[in-house]
Length: 416
Ligand code: IMP
Image (cartoon, rainbow, N blue to C red; front, side, top):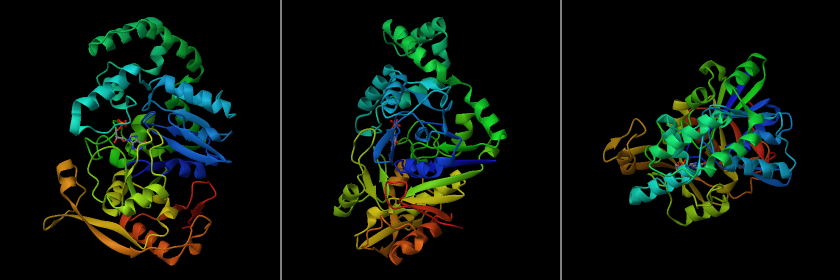
């Protein structure tokens, strides 16, 4: 039996979709278990660029089935737009997409609430993607939210919507019920009990790939709170998001970029504010695939990475975008944090503490060569191999994959 989780282990945008694309060809099921349309998973496949927000990226494989599990919050309008765009590119959904009936619904109300909450926070804003994710999860936890299955019961839907709008002291437009009922006719064939589906698939020895969204440092409980997303992005979120037991997760692969990035607000100890950061941003095309925002850039933070390796229970790691660092004369890796004379022994949980840390760096020589055609570890320049070895040693997890370009073929698999 084989299941694999592919998780972003920093602040998102670690090129997880590229790794899923590389490993997912044989997957019987590709499963999204948390987040929503705040995700932007980009895949370059057969000369075409695909950006996925809610649909699992496994939909590109004709033999893979795709599951949007209960832990995801779904904006049905955005999901249908995404499905329409993919249908135009020749992708089939019938019999291949499964949406758990318990998944929460994101409504335009939630997007409005997201924007007004951000405006209200002023200088303390989170820098959300404004997709309504936080308010939708908040309503779900407050038990006033709507779920996918509510679309199937018109009277119930209408009274739950009224209660939701009343809860937020807003006027419900009666046309919304009709609009949701129209959406229902299109989504109904895909609604199911995904926990049953996955448990049965597991017993039938199917290969299941869990595709994480965002990253561990954006986890609502263990990330850099409050500058986080509103779901559990770490491996534990797979169980609560899918309704499967921990023992059904056979292997966990953590994805790290060869440097760090973050979008939105919040402390970022290794952030670069100089020409090196600008160069990496341009070279790595570090602009958000959901919002287009320029991403903040920093050196690889092995202290944070070791923390996320532990909380996820990683079996191995993938390092992506290594090619982006070519041409830099010197590279730095953060090996620890100091506050005054005190060297920290654990990753800070409070923003005041994280903001106060001074990173300790190891300096390494860079390399000049273009890596994009390398397909074997021993073809990489020695400086690049040394760089990877330092990451592997500090994160204390074996390196399994290295990505040197956006294409599926631009991947180095490391045999253990
Ligand atoms: P939200 O998920 O839209 O509520 O945004 C909360 C925080 O998570 C913000 O800092 C966002 O920039 C960040 N975030 C959400 N989704 C992603 C993602 O897919 N990649 C990177 N950052 C994200």
